Image 1 (cartoon, rainbow, N blue to C red):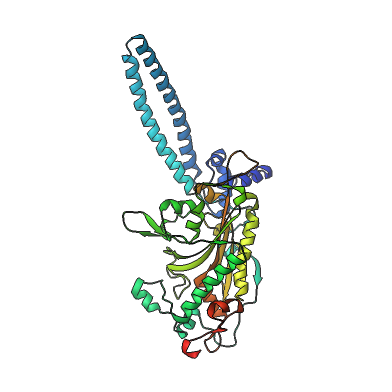
Image 2: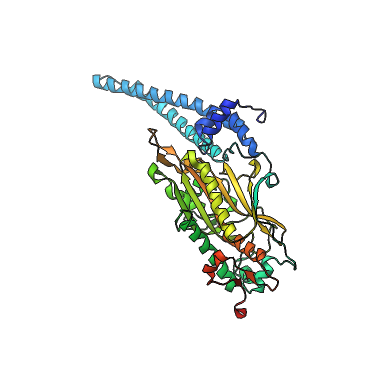
Length: 451
């Protein structure tokens, strides 16, 4: 029934133009939950509409009854007041008002529970895909937009990033296991220096050429901050929670604290767009990915990322998305790394995203492209949760803004790509010209004793 639901062209346009403004927007879900179900089906999500309809019907009935009891209590209280003013007995009215008050308290408590259930149901809904998002089930259905550069090929045996880093005495995986367990890494010497240089290079590029303001934020945040960007309550198992009296979580991405910097704010239109960039540690449990990319630095619990965040007026958010993709691409271009850009299909979209582009860098050891950046427009999905708004001069009420985020880039994966694509037969790593100022002008990365 959900898949058979059809929207007229006119209604579909209005639906996509208005529904994609929230958590989702409760009013619009109530107006046509089947339309929401049809839209979410494009993500491969089967919506439990019967649960919502049952909760909503009970809420409506209880709301009417509660309002009736409130009016009845008010009328009885008025009669009691009038009786006392005349010196008449009011015992009958007082007994009746106590009965009404007790019933009203029960209704109000049940109504509170219903509203929480509805809120929780809505909080579990992902964002509505943008009209331009292709249909598909998973990453195999993503659409390639463009390729830049030719895949790197060598006339000597290709080594992967672990072998290359070990050749440079730049990684100690055994020490990482001893310190923290699997999926952690210790970097040393020239590899650690390259890792640091990459992050500095990205920050300088984004701040000096792309107009972002650099921010530094905590890596521990409260639950409501993760709710604001959509990580909670849906993805609890993917997060690291700190044991103790305070409920704090390690951030999975700087998108979480950086976007929340403007929560509960009403911004003047003159302040827009807001563009932040942040270099931070990130922590992910990688739940459900056991056995995937276990070797080396590709999928680890702790990593570093340079994150871009933009907060813009709704009518320009898709222009901002294209701009952000270009900013991430510029990093790869200057580092002379071959890559491609893909549009994610509905089934591969992240929870909060209305549309996402992935940048995938070529990894010679795997002979394929791998994700190094995701750039997403969440429209007002996060803004509604965080109440990030602006004063539109044409409107009387504050309006929700659109939030965007993108990796610019994942530093560890960029390190992997640098080692593998720029490897030399003797184990040295060629350094592109744009990165050399951050490495003392060196043209090659090599063991210190070889320099």
